Length: 249
Length: 106
Image 1 (tube, rainbow over the protein chains, first blue to last red):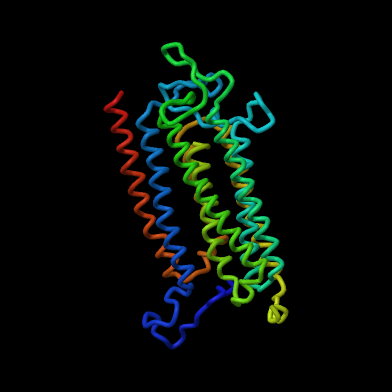
Image 2: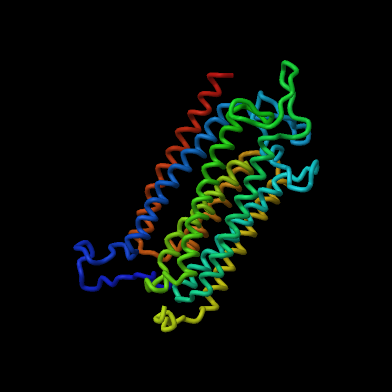
């Protein structure tokens, strides 16, 4: 329940007549919230579009054990995403994406600890937790790079089409896993999210740098950590939804 | 840089930090539970419903606690949450649409 860094009292004042923050949040935080709201609508549109196209394609009817890739029906995600680095040929469904989820949740925790430290003007703790947050973000992006690489290159056996040709991996027009739209949505949704993570890492680095050189301390508050923190938590939030609707369902 | 030494560092509130780690633990447990369900339950509307509910539980903790929205003023909370009802409309409309495309194609 601690007060935000730039809390403004509005006792005895008309809150809409200027000079105070109408919603008890600073201008910067308010604008970040409304930006995130619009971004949430964009991600909703992408995920709902995925649902639409999935419903517009035939679903796989058989058992999970007998599943094989086909252009004729939508793949089961756990059969597509079952590779883990250094464990070639071992089927570990969703394990790697689980690791990625864990990394992102942890970096959200370190970010909230950085925000907490900033509210106490504890420069050393802000630097420490921002560094951990940065590492988490970079680790997530590295995992995603590997995942994309594996998805594009494909499995050893690939997938045989009706005309007898075998295709491996994925591009935007054809893929070994299922209908072309499956790979298109994979690239677009995880790519759009990954780009958010990338820009989040850039912003986190900026805040980390400003904290290290003492700029935020000289400004007198660490509100920038809170604003970028909101963005970073949002990136984690979006991943929670991508994880459910792209990988689990 | 001289004034840097004058900055008063407020000591950490152990209870608050404990609470943050507790929420992290909840998020981790819910994700672990999702994994358990993913591999022990047959596919069907019930499985999907459980996933959706657990996702909303995780989203609640991230937004309310990590993003601190649960402790902001009511006007801010509703300004952020209310516009999201349009997403509900979008889901209903486009799922019906997807079903219609399927019927037309197959």
